[in-house]
Length: 267
Image (spheres, rainbow, N blue to C red):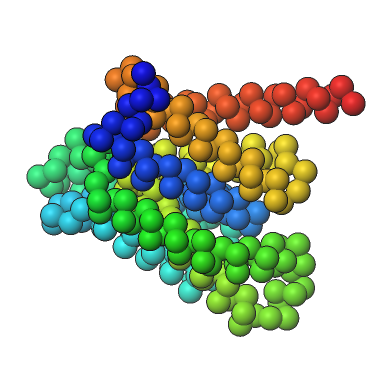
């Protein structure tokens, strides 16, 4: 019954939107974890949520308003030459405070603030699908160019120091791509669901993968399977999608890591 609901005309488009984002966000999360900037996923998501809520207050769809805050945060990080998770922790604080204040002092009320955090995937339409396809296509175009340089910059930092101009262009390009991905994810799946997809599967993949290629396949595999299961469970049992997705992700990754650890102990 749950599998059939995916192909119901009412849920077909929301399912497609979420499926695209569930494949993209773990790839971005892998690179953020590689750079020890995994908190970026949450920081950018919070800024996206804040600007998305501000946009809603002015009648702008969240999926269009959300990228503005995330891109602003990415630009501030790049031009401010910040490294590590400290700047992203500040983004979380600023984004949370802004979201709560806008929700409390606008006609939208706290209901829309909670809806943005928890996600409104089932109401996704053509605009959301177009945004997901656009950021997905942009990622397919840029990631093959960015990934080798980002991995090289992490493993061979001397190369990055000797090529400062190219390194700066590469870093700001990835920061903006990550900002757009997290913004569209937060505007469709919800703030915490988007963060979970970018954080949990890469965490598990980094613990069990044998190499970088396996890491990408494992993280995307976990995320997409968890997304399909969560989508069906939420529909069949009439549960909010965001919390169900997070719960399924945690259970799946916990199982994968436990099994991998068991086999390592047996060797």
